[in-house]
Image (cartoon, rainbow, N blue to C red; front, side):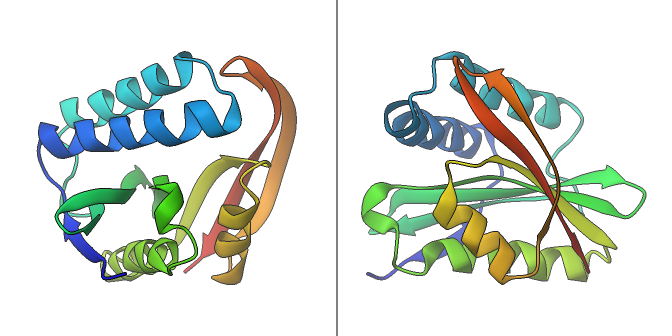
Length: 161
C-alpha cells in the first residue's frame, strides 16, 4: 500500500478529519454522535484562532488520492504541543501509516522546538496506545468517566522532546 502524507490547510481538510473520525470511531467503538460534534467543535475553535499556525499542523494520509488517515499538532503554549486527531481507516491499519503520521508530528514538533508533547486517548485504542508508547510517550494520568455515550478510561500521555 502506497501512502502519501500531505499537509492540510483549509476547511475541506478539516471536514475530512471530522468525516474520518465519524466513519471510524462511532461504529467501531460505540461512541454516540456527540463524539463527532466534539471533534468538529474542537477543530472549528482551533481554526478561529488561526490554526494551523507556524508551530501547528494538520496532515492527511492518502492512498490513490483517497484520505485514509489524519493527525494534528497544536501549540498549547509554554513549550507544550498537543498531538491529536490520529485516525486510520480499518484497511490502512497495520501498514505503517500510523507510525508515519506520528513520526511526522514528532519531526514537526522538534523543528518547532517544543519541549514536550501531550495527547489524550481512551484505553480501548490499544494499537494506538502501543504506537504512542513505542515512540516514548508515557501515561501520566487516567480516569474512568462517561464520555460520548459510554464509560471509558480516559488517558493523558506526555513525551519529553
